[in-house]
Image (cartoon, rainbow, N blue to C red; front, side):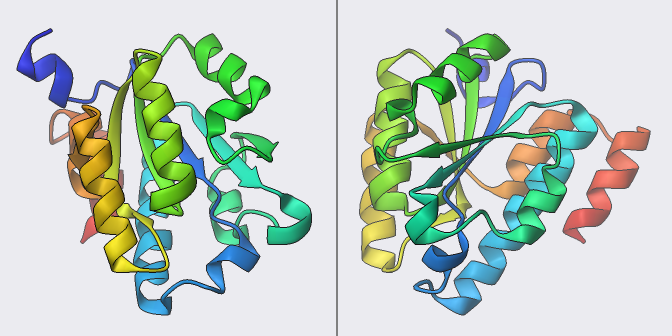
Length: 188
């Protein structure tokens, strides 16, 4: 595998995963960081919709933690949503089956909490042979220390650290298209 194959996202190979950005879990998060996270995941959801990148959403123990934030669910109207009890998304047979059914090999990861559900998912996805891109400004934990530790661990697994704009512009590839004109406005 070339360096380019490992680090560049391709719209026909990618799938966006939003992990557990749920109402009651969000209450425990730093409000300023949560606003940025929600904005960035929103940008990625709009980009995925425009570029025909599949989206999978998970919700951990909905009865206790509530549903995905309405503003994100609204932007992901066509996304498949899976409730889970396991911390790793890969603990959901339905999630794994849907992910494999996409035929995609690159997984763009967003969500919370970075050091629990996100980390465990990334480890299992890497173990299953997926190329994983962890969007650092679109994942969060209650503590910055836990977030940083998880980012380091995921990078050690071979996951590629990235940010919202890098992911979006890699999927776009070129300027001057209608897609570019529409999506570039999201990051101004």
